[in-house]
Length: 294
Image 1 (cartoon, rainbow, N blue to C red):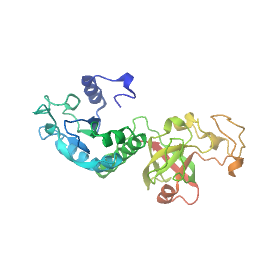
Image 2: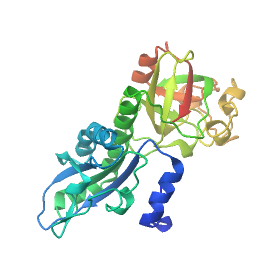
Image 3: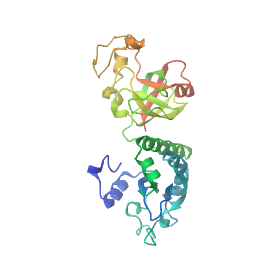
Image 4: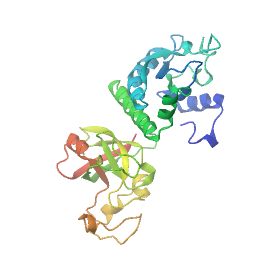
């Protein structure tokens, strides 16, 4: 990410420098469009043939355009080239050194998403809708993960750590609003016991790593909600360390008694899996899994 909020915005030139320093598999820039007319569509722009990574850029753009368009309820725009972006009748891109500023690097594939048109009232409402934004983020992440997986490229967080043999329980995330403020809109969802994990994507595998799936962290739990030492470190889950214990309210990393839910004592679980994810991984009932951030 070149920024987490608008108060720490890098200049256009600095974004390119920042990206080149990371040597990424892809540079992705997300925008909202405007025009003298008011069309309604999402567009994805890829590099032209004069860029080294033209072929890869075009393939990635084609892989994500449908998912991001459906997220904002707009018409699916075709994949365009940077040279097809015009201002005052002139192309914004004629060479790698004369192009949209953030897209002038020739070291990696780059794509630009125009989520919709701000001067179209329906597009504007859809773009500002936080549920749609989360859908778009999820669809983009999943479509990119599927693309790179098919290409044999594994893209992971540089700080990722495998959490192995973690006891997992099943949970139905689809029928309620979760700690993230949303329902599970994909069938592969999980809960982890620290708020820093919300809305992130993890890879979950069975214990011998023969079956793996990416899943969206939609909720907090089980048992604890602030177990950062486990989620972001190398500690074992607090609920596992204290398996069999009945927690007092907000004990340890904000662990709560669960007697009212039929679980009077910790069963040692460090992750909740959606039913579909558990079935895919072949976890019978409750069982152990491996997971890491991606």
